[in-house]
Length: 190
Figure 1 (cartoon, rainbow, N blue to C red):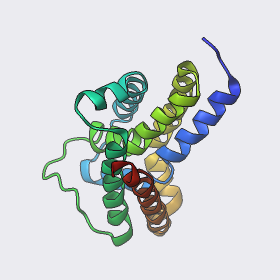
Figure 2 (cartoon, helix red, strand yellow):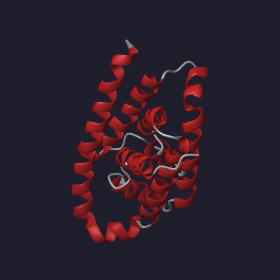
Figure 3 (cartoon, helix red, strand yellow):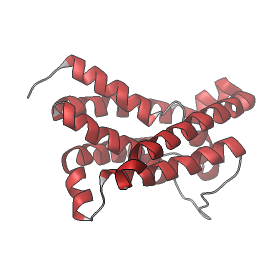
Figure 4 (cartoon, rainbow, N blue to C red):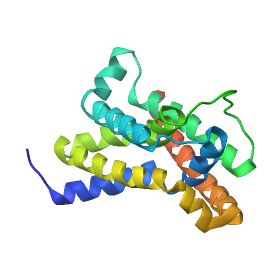
């Protein structure tokens, strides 16, 4: 086991940018309004397990079911694209008639541990020691948990107008991430 602080910091920053939990605050607040309660612990734990599992067996699982990393990333780009459209246009594309809770779907997957995150984890694995990536995942999950747990307070501080402004800004950023993820990986399909 080679602990490397530089690898941990770099991997943490990459995952922080891809997970973009701060940019997801408007989505989290919307989900809380729809379902009444967000299971922060469960969402964080499931996302952590998904990311760590994917770190060690992700490529093999994708190969087993005949999906390459590029296809997975393009599919993730579509999910991110539609989430961004919801944020920018103020429409609802994902409809769950009777959502009981928001934990696994859509929080843990695809919002926290989505295709972009999983693809990034596979990319990091090619360059860094797995133990350093695991530590980076844990660091990010702690931050995710704090944001999920305090989403009500964040909403009060920002107010309705602040949330709407952030929703539009991060919707555009999310849209840009979707386009980049799509453009980067679509070439690999042909």
